Image (cartoon, rainbow, N blue to C red):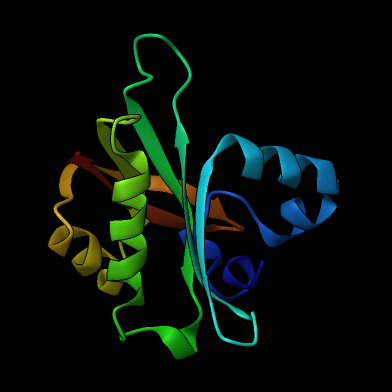
Length: 144
């Protein structure tokens, strides 16, 4: 939820939408997806990444990366690389291609994904609308 508050332009849902959802909807999403978190010795969440496998027969070889967030105080120390590598390992044998979208303004995350082998396959100028402000997004993919 902190990510939704600090960077609303980086997520397809809003803090207020998510705050209204019942706990059972989060439990279902967590159980139906691959979710990897990193935490401090005191069990404070420092970073998270998740992937949802597409369900249709013709698209179940693909997964959509979602919910990626690293707390500001843990950025720049390799945590993003570690979470991505753990995600790749968890997807092995289940998913052959990962897809994600990233806000045009989030250059640090874009560099991380490019370094991890993702490539651009599209660009959407008005992907999200927050109040009267539009957010453009890069569409990226990586074959596993």
